[in-house]
Image (cartoon, rainbow, N blue to C red; front, side):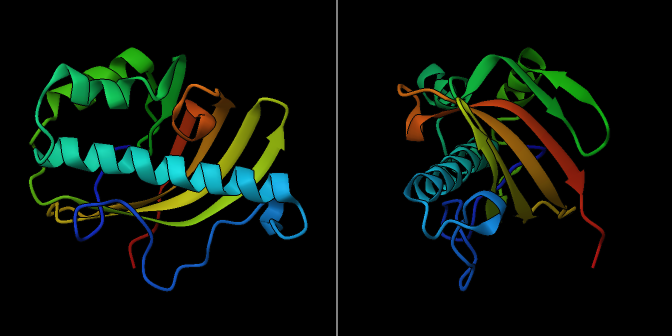
Length: 170
């Protein structure tokens, strides 16, 4: 979530030719629930990064309703372990993102290699790569997210924890 972005064309999504999200440990085939969980994780990760990109770029209006789409995705006890090692609460993340409206006008975010790592009861764990472009300091990261199932949330998932790690420069 650090300095998030969207893909070219203004929406977060896959890179052409990217493999579809897979189920737990890469095996979605033969497990309809695993395939559905993997698809929900992918859709929610792409959706939220699209919101982040729109907000940071300023393409999304700075209104309470628009910001609520980001804020409501996160559970009250959401935590973020950032790629710099910082641990942030939901309140800290919301404050940072809200203040960053329009500060990264050329930002684009691409999400790649979404994988459902584990699913147990109400929890899902997914891993993905986040590629950011257009910031002047393009940084890529690997991320692992813990979701809690919530039938009232988009794609039936709310963000509980996110851990990001910088990837080595190419």
